[in-house]
Amino acid sequence: MEQTMQQTTQVIRPEELLKHWQGHRDLTRRVIEAFPEKEFFEFSLGGMRPFAAMTMELLGIAAPGLRELAGGNTGTLSEHFEHGNQKARILEQWDADTEEINRVFATIPTERFQEHIKLFGQYEGTVWSSLFYFIDNEIHHRGQGYVYLRVLGIEPPFFWDRK
Amino acid sequence: MEQTMQQTTQVIRPEELLKHWQGHRDLTRRVIEAFPEKEFFEFSLGGMRPFAAMTMELLGIAAPGLRELAGGNTGTLSEHFEHGNQKARILEQWDADTEEINRVFATIPTERFQEHIKLFGQYEGTVWSSLFYFIDNEIHHRGQGYVYLRVLGIEPPFFWDRK
Image (cartoon, each protein chain N blue to C red):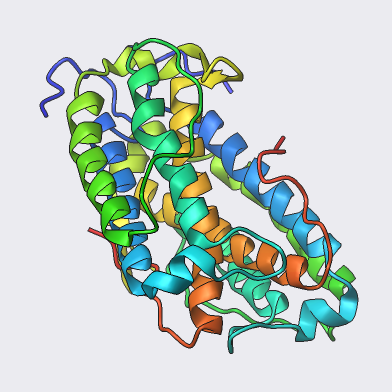
């Protein structure tokens, strides 16, 4: 992606933000993979949700949210689709969304990031703050997934190991 | 902070990044406060560190790391100081660092964020990617602290409630 119109140095360029996000998404994918099938859908601590439910939230936010940020129609937040408790089905959706995120992100003009938006008809912020929320929320829940894995006796991938 | 020299819209402006970071630090402070004194230093799950040890890592990174990012001398990463298992002593350091971060951050020129750095003499990246690492790492460990609190039967502050 070329940014030939850039006159001022960006704190972070759009393509860097995309790569940063996808690096986190790749790490989250490896955390999903690290869970045994049954525990992914059933294991939890302290009355919290299983990691599968957190993953469904992440899927409900990322690609649908980005479509809105890019100027698409306002939708409602949905954290459900038919996965039949199959991790493979969820990973398939994850990978399809990875491609869609790359495609949609590239259509966002730089000046759009500072625009105001009311995401999913209710969450107010700027385009950048919404995107940061997507990433932060993913790190937050993935950190919880790390504890689940540790308690299950499974070593999670290194936090700093990102593409 | 005025950015009168800005010709091109920033994806995120330096002062927005600072506010975003401090919003996360404020939330982490409230998570520290939510822990009972004893559990803060002793409770853990799955062989992980108590939240106090994670907090000491965050303190070792944030203000000392930012000083380097702003052009200060290279130091070594230290995750220890004498706190005598007093949460109040750690919170006191946290608050002093909050002020220092505001002060030091304001001295970083915008073009500096894209510069290369080898932080603490070993971690290579740009200034922005290092800062993002500080924030991401804090969210990651704080998410783990949320699980500790839930297992202890304590309701953590809302993740989205930031200044």
